[in-house]
Image 1 (cartoon, rainbow, N blue to C red):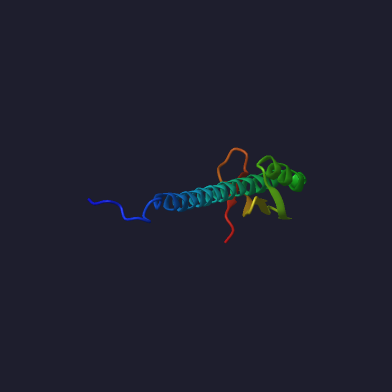
Image 2: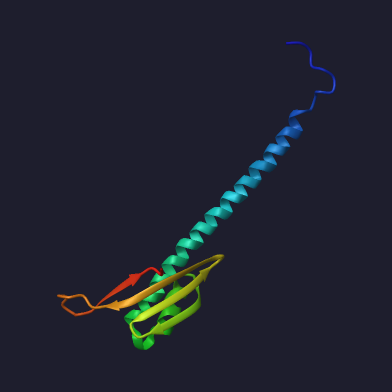
Length: 121
């Protein structure tokens, strides 16, 4: 190899600076996507727990749903309770989830009632 051409000196520093900025941007993006995924999972868990708690205690459905949602780090956005069906929508961060729970009778069970949850259509 020959001698470096004048004016080529110091070319690595700007290139390294650009790479550093890109790496920092990708790290921030990965962190944000991870946070969104965690919020979605937490919202689904909170919605399911709130809906099941509400259907399990029909006389205290609303307070139980709000209590379980808060215990799972969520805020209840909407709550519907009509007979043996409960629909709870919660928010965690930017994520929102809905859960539907119904009181179901299972034939042959010792108590005669079991609780089941289904996802909304």
